[in-house]
Image 1 (spheres, one colour):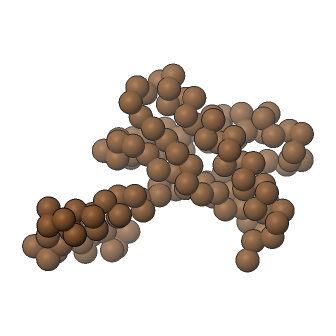
Image 2: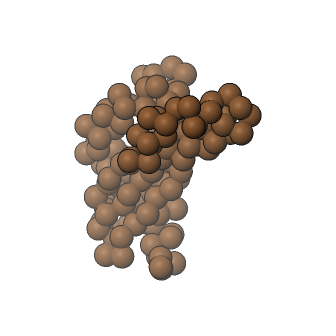
Length: 129
């Protein structure tokens, strides 16, 4: 269970991370939307796991590689923004939040647009992730 301190730090990181990533997306990648769906901070406050939702999803892998490659710069920008709130900036780990893709797949299946029984291979692949 998360403590209030963990929740507060996660909220601060999430809010500032959204500004940093969306600013970078606006400057370098037109039409790309990056949102931070959740941030989880470990109990020792040493690590922050950020879950990102990226639209359009076909550019997801390329954008995630760029974010992971620039983790140091992102962490520094975050530290500058939160210097009055956090003494030590946690290590950042980024993960793709594909729950929206999952919801979209279910929605299409319910509408009859995509039959999950006919597409067994793709359903199995998604479960393996």
